[in-house]
Length: 285
Length: 298
Image 1 (cartoon, chains in turn blue, cyan):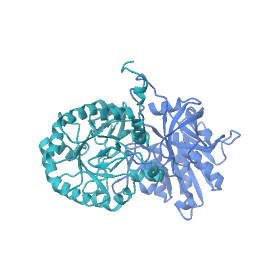
Image 2: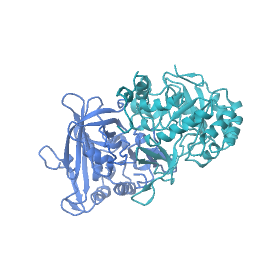
Image 3: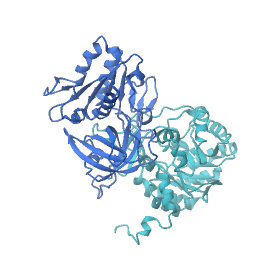
Image 4: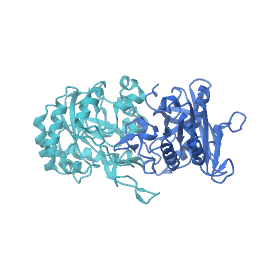
């Protein structure tokens, strides 16, 4: 289902901490329910003013949706996971309850079911790190609802940086049983990187029966892409790229294709199959 | 009813070339785009004789009240455009203007002839000013070169030829004069201003190409002055653009002699911005004036 044409003003319903990130909940009264992997262009309605931001932020920011559920009173309640990486995300993180945000979306494509990616794939392995765990949270929920077998591997730096982890906890507050953690300081789960959890799965006998879904920092995504390629396992990667518009107008979000040329991440992605790209690089992420 | 070179327009707001991909927008927003199309005419992204991949990332960089871009004219090439894109753009409910750039007069002439022969096309825009591609700078920087190019292209098309002027010259009015003498039907201005920025993370230029073109509200005073000076120099209709985000901004361009205005960067922030600007222009009192005798430093 298409996004409503144009941007619309939506109200912020809540803004809470999530392990150092913020989860900002937005009430979208008009839009359709998004699919996992899709994103929205967001901009605070209230201007910063008085040169506080040196005329920035100016453009909206592309943020993938971490959760979506029917809102009381109609429409959809959208959750966005926000790190503070610049004036745009900083402004969005500061939005208080009942403040307004410009919303365009849902935009872009979405993760495909395992059988759509690979005919004999029965299950899924979700691999996330950093703020990139956001789209995987919604994907895990959808796979759970549809009975798609899945495992979730998440990587975090240390005890102070566990943003988004609670998106993978059940109503009791306990981590969902299918979730395994890797932390670089070893305070929880395996000490190491999330790829250390992925490697034994890819090396296992039944690796070919699964599809890997990943989102996270460029270096992590590239490691996941390369590992999957090496083991012949299908992978879908949700990428990030600077984009001004989100709907194919600005041509800013160019991602190199193997053999030359570029994809527009906003309309050809943000979810791309491993073989659709040359690699994941900081140069465009 | 506003018109541009004899093309009747429902309102005076069109899009700036290269800032709206109507085919991609239709995929994102569905047929609501057609029912509520935000522009009175649609200007295509610039087409070149052969396909172009565009510049290496990074391609965009946010700046104070604006942005830099270094896109590099990615397009399917003339034949790809005519075969694949033009039939789909013809489904838009507004007249179609096709933007063309080439590096030689012969190539330019071939593109103009091929595009002009298509009945879906209402007018042709000649991009002689894109600052991202070196060849684009040469013609548009020189009144004599611009005049000579127009003299070569004028006999190839009965359809209106609109010349996009570069703002990156000392005297854009002189180049507009060259376009007029060569037989242009209108000029559009401004294209983006050459600019760059440094990525604080690397200490190197932020854009892959080293520099780009600045757009957004930051350029509006520059654009307005260029429209004013070009208006004083030539009698051609002017498509005015540069940082228009509201009706009041568009009204400034119209007050200085633009016949029509174009919305570019603002569409990135708000996909229906063109319609909003047109609606605000039609309201009997623009917001700023209805608020009373507001002073600039009030």
